[in-house]
Image (cartoon, rainbow, N blue to C red; front, side, top):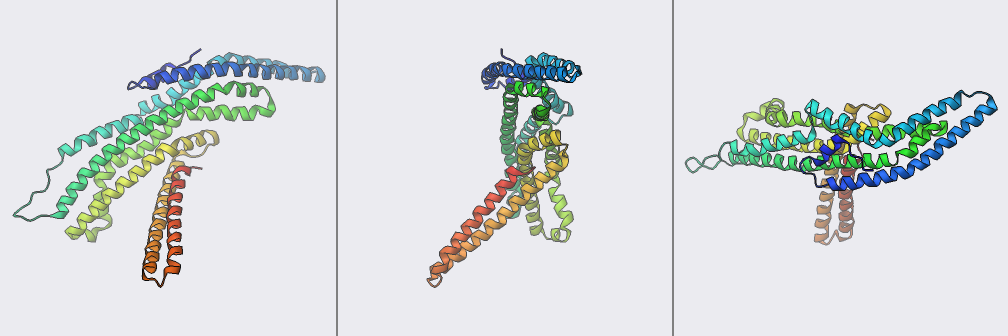
Length: 362
């Protein structure tokens, strides 16, 4: 029997989702797997009932047997609807909630992509060449503005695709997790395995909250997109007030501030995409703080990127020094080891940045 919750059908079919037929087949396969595993759950529940009957006969207390019958009846009643309820929870606790809060990641990225795509048409024309005088800084500012706007268009498109794929991964995880759920439902009847079963069901429920983590991360990204980039130059002018008196320095600082803000936004979007689901799941299962988890993940990623950049620069300098010594002939014996050490430093820097980006939030 194929089970597709109504809200999930809307999400899967949105935008003519080409994976809709895949989900139909996946739901059918998972339903058949769940039917087979239900037999295992029935065996576990029957064994648990026999154990309680035996304890009641030996101990003369039948309260445990009646409690076991009640728990078994509840599990049998909910087992056929488990997958449908989980998919409905995914829709209610994720997509519907974010839509009500107006922080849906897909809608936010789509709106920003559209606004940034229209923005270059509204910008001032290229600086004029007055009396044959070419102002490179004015042209650089204009070029950076155009490049930055189109860069944000590209980022919005890429992140939209990645977040869309994230929603698909979430639905697949719920389907696969629900297919194996009957075993853990049967484990609820034993005291020795009850804690494991409860953790499994809470963990599967925490997957339904992934969009909430994405939405909370997008709140900060939205603030940076709407006010961070326009105010980047003003913040830089406030911090570096005396340097802004000279026009050339002011132009360089303004361009640098915009570039830094763009890098921060890109980094935060990737942190939100990859770290937010893990942080939210950890919050549901252990009670960890979501806000501090996101901030910690962002700081760890930024530190990893900075550390990787420093090590890479150090490695490049050592490679250059080794090459220079090798070229003179006098330092040929030490040139090659220094170049190898430099390459190792660059590799270590890149590895630390990758680890910080993917392993933050632990």
